[in-house]
Length: 69
Image (cartoon, rainbow, N blue to C red; front, side, top):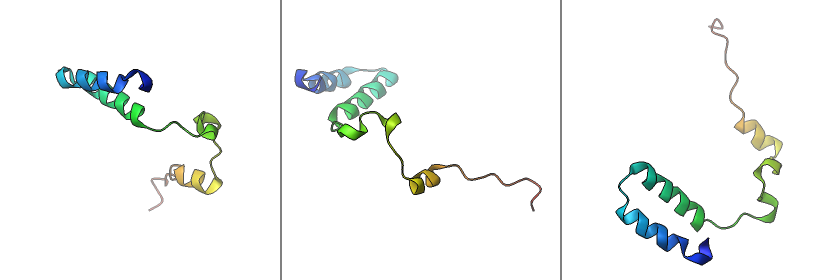
């Protein structure tokens, strides 16, 4: 898509688009297009190994029982 000047087409579309949902979609697509390609090891994010210390930080905190006061 980058090689076919998709960014330029989207830039022009963004200039005259009036629908807010379409504007948001265009901006999201432009963000994707300007990003670098993922590293080979990160192409499938479902297979990325997350270190245990990082995984622990991503877990939601345990809820306290309501009567523990």
